[in-house]
Amino acid sequence: MALDTLYQAETPEGIALALRPAGLVARAQAWAIDFGIRLGLFFVISLVAGIAGGLGAAFLLIAYFLLEWFYPVVFELGRGGATPGKQALGLQVVMDSGLPVTVAASVVRNLLRAADFLPFLYAAGAMALLLRHDFKRLGDLAAGTLVVYRETVRLHGALPEAPPVAPARLLSGAEQAAIVAWAGRGTRLTPERFEELAQLARPVAGLPAGARGADLTRRLLGVAHWVLGHREAQR
Image (cartoon, rainbow, N blue to C red; front, top):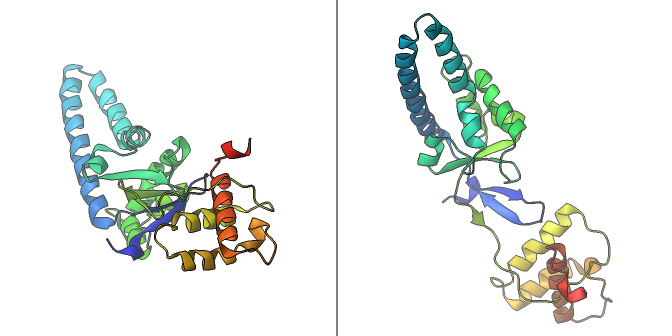
C-alpha cells in the first residue's frame, strides 16, 4: 500500500483515520458490475411490461428512471454504503470526514453523474479522478464524498493509561487531533522522543516551566484522554 495515496480524515471525536481512495480501475469495474445488474433488472421488467399491454411502455419508462437515479442512492444509504458492484470490489462511499454518506450527499453525487458523463462515456469524471490524489469525480467534489476501500487504516494505536485532565485552555479541533495523534504514537516512539514532542504542547498542559518531562508527558496524556471524553477519573 502506497502511503502517498492515503487520505487522512478526522472524526468529530478527534480520531485520525487513514482512508484509501479507490482509483479509476476499481471504480470502473464496480460500475460495470452495477450496469450489468441494472441491465438484467430492466430486461426482467421489460418482460413483465410486455404482458401489461399499452401500460407497459409507461411502466418501462418509470422503471428506467428509478434504476438510473435511485439504484445507487438506495444502496449507498444502506449499511454497507455501497452498491453491489462496489461491495464486490470492497469499496464504499463515505463523507470526507469518514462518516457514512448522508441522504443529501448521495443524491447530489448521483445527480451529477450527468456532468461526469460529458462529453461521452464518463470522460469528465475519469479525467477528474486522474487529476486528483483523492480520486474524486465531479459528483464527489460537489457532495463532499469519497469512494474508499472498506478496510480503513488507523494511524494511531491505543492511548497509554493516564488519568483524564482538562486542558489549560480551550483547544481548537486541530489541536485536539494533534494531541490525540501524539498520544496514540506513545507505544511506537522512544520515551525520549515522546517527551520531546510533548514539550511542544507545554502551554496546553498548564504546568510550570520547571516541571519534569515525565510530569508533562503524563499530564498531556491526561489531556488526550479528556479530549476523547474519558472523564470518569475527574468525578
